[in-house]
Structure formats: structure tokens, C-alpha cells
Length: 256
Length: 220
Ligand SMILES: Nc1ncnc2c1ncn2[C@@H]1O[C@H](COP(=O)(O)OP(=O)(O)OP(=O)(O)O)[C@@H](O)[C@H]1O
Ligand SMILES: [Mg+2]
Image (cartoon, rainbow over all chains, first blue to last red; front, top):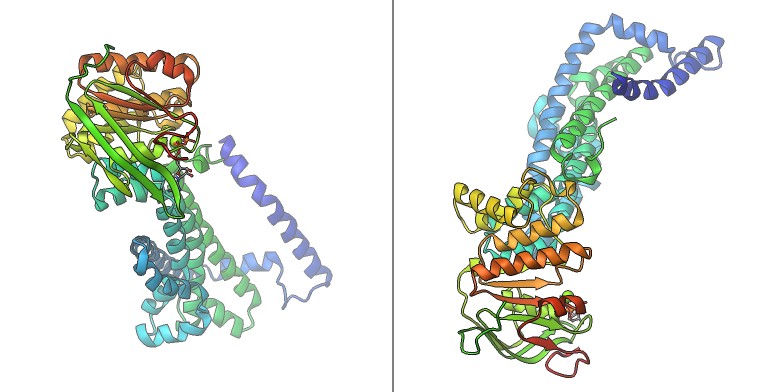
């Protein structure tokens, strides 16, 4: 109970301070309400549009989770391929970098042409945006295996396959978790961007509300979207803690 | 341990062994060495004179530039290597770490667990099967790594300064354990490489290979 308190109260302090400041600033008239709505009206708008937002949230959460899972699986496989080194790495790494540098806003319309005006394009957008950190971090992990342990595996005639599964991948796990943490947030961003174009989910709702100048609704949906990102991030943190707590320095302490 | 019999079979015969690393560093320069069954050989020489390199070549982890190493040991389970530091798999418990060599060699589970428990008892870690390496002291970790080397019942044990990391008391007991184990399976050869004079005094009955000035077969 005490750790829950310690976990929840500190982040609430800045929120309360900033929200009170906004409330005062708008009601006194320092800031126009169509630029920055009052926190209380954001909350009220959230209540009014509860149903609509909840439906959009489910859609966005689904696309984010699927996109994130694809990034995890494809990114890890791609990193294993790259870790073979030599010409394979030289041939394919530039394309991994491409995923990081490509402006998603620019290719999202293309994704819609390829995958159609539905959740498929949104998932593709989430995957494209979030795959690079998985590839890069997993690759770093796979390539930083202790050379002495590689010697040990070689000494006992371990196959490439068992070296990968019993040594390289477990060693890379902390790095993979770092990649997943970054990818979790990015997959929500990728989903929202995709939805700006296809019109579904929270992204579509933000776009429509903006056009209707319902600024407090835009903020309400934004809050829900970032909440989704935080939940995904927290789930990865929990997974990381469960997998690594016994052996990796990053997770030795309890989560508080 | 008894003085090895001069007529006991040759385990390893090294002729004109040379190892040159890329960049022209000559780590070993035409070395000749014969190791017999039951022998205890210590390699002594200043840092960087090629001791670790020789052990790696004997273990088959690296290839010589010139010369040859004839080794009677054809099975992978016959050679074990202990590194300067423990180098355990941190995500495995002690038992899983000790069983690793048998697992890689394809030994079935029930036998390898039984064998690993037995070895762990011998190095005095019988109670710690279920611990993770992070929950052990440095000396205990080193003993786990020694147990891992012994678990295949190797006939040649290559020790690369494994006692350097231990404190004053632990090495003496560890040493006794290595030796008592050898007494039972006497046809093991040990190549032990160390620059610690104390280890030489207490362990070296057999050949010592000196290269204090780097002027003989070890090139610096
Ligand atoms: N992979 C490598 N590439 C290039 N040079 C190397 C490599 N490994 C070792 N060397 C060089 O070969 C020489 C012998 O190295 P080695 O590790 O065998 O020394 P050592 O006798 O074990 O020393 P120490 O007592 O410090 O462990 C050194 O000069 C070292 O710098
Ligand atoms: Mg060395």
C-alpha cells in the first residue's frame, strides 16, 4: 500500500500544479479558451463524449498493440538476421536505418494506398514507426555477447542455433526490453498518425474535433491517447521486471 | 599428487608452434612442449607473453599460424577451460550453469542434473543450487565456474589464472578440491597458467615452463 502511494502521488503533484495554473490563467483571461481550454471543461467534455472516446480508444489500443507486437517480432527477427554479420549486415542495415529516418507523415498516405482505408494501414503505420528501436537495440545486445562465453560454447561444440537461444538472445534481453520501451510509445504515435489519414480511432476523433473547433474535446482525446501510451509503457516495464529481476542490474531493486 | 611417470602416455605434443596476430604481434614463437598424462604444468611469464594465447590454441579456440598441436583428446568433453573471471550465465541458476557443458554436449537431463549436484557438493556449494550468480560472493562464483569445468570429467583442465580473483583462504581449499578430484581420476593433465608465485609453490609438482625474460620459446 505504501509503495503504491509512493508510486502514484509524486507524478500527481506537477499535474495538479499545472492544471490549477491553467484553470486560473484561462478564467482570469490571460489565455483565450480556444487556445487552451480550462482543465475542468476538458474533464466535462471527456464525460460528455465518454461513449465515443471509449470506442475510439478500443480501436486505437488494438491497432497499437498489434503494430507493437509486429515490431517486436519482425524487429527481433531482422536483428538476428543482421547479427549474422558480414555482407548480410552491410546489405540490410541501411534499410533498418530507413525506417528510422522516413517521415511517417509523408508515407502514411502511401500506406493507405497499399493497405486500404482501414485498420490495416494504421497497423502498418504503427509498425513502421516503432520497429527501428527494436532492431537497433536487439542488434546491439546480440553483438555484445561476452567473448569468453562464446569461447565456452565453442569449446563444447554448441551449434549456431543453441548459441543463439542459450547465449546470444538471453544476453540481449535487457537491450531488447530497452527497445520495446521506446517502441511502445512510438507505436501509439504511429497509430494516431495513421488514423489522421484513415479517420478511425482516437486519431480520427482528434482530427474531427479540431475541424469542429472543439478544442476541449481535442485535449480530452489527447489525454486518453497519452494515457494509452503510458499503460503500454508500464506493461513493458512490468514484463521487464519479471524477466530480469534475478540477474540484471537494471531490475535488481523493487519497482518503486 | 605424485611426480608424473616419465613414461606415461603423451597427451599433447606441441611442435614449432607460432602464433602471430593480425598487425604482426607475435604472441608465441616456435614453442615445443610435451604434456603427459597426469602431469601438472604451470606456465609462468610476464603479462602479455602469450600464456592465454597458448591455452586458447590448445583448447582449439584459435588456430596456430605455424606449427602443430597433436592432441590425444578427441572428445569435446575431455578438455575444460576455466577463465580468469567466473563468466557465468547470469540468467541461470547455479545448477543450470554447472550443467551447461553437459547440456551442450547433448547429455540427457536427469544424468546432467545428478552429475552437477555431485560436483557442486564437491566444491562445497551443495546448498546453493537455486541461487542466481548475482546472489553469490566472488569466490563462490569462481567455484561455480570451476565446477562447470569439472562436470564433464575432463582429462585436461586448462586454468587461465583462475585463482587471481580469490582471496587468500579460498584458493587453498579450491586447490585442494582440484587435487583431490584429480587423485581419483588420475589420468588428467592440468595446464595451469599463473603468474602468482604462491600458486607455483603449493601446486607445481611437474613441469614449470618459465619465460621470465621472454628469451626462450615464448616471444614477447
Ligand atoms: N586477439 C588478439 N589480437 C591481437 N593481439 C593479441 C590478441 N590476443 C592477444 N594478443 C597479443 O598477444 C600477446 C599475448 O597475449 P596473451 O593474452 O596470450 O598474454 P598473457 O601471457 O596471457 O598475458 P597476461 O598474463 O596479462 O594474461 C599480447 O601482446 C597481446 O597483446
Ligand atoms: Mg592471460
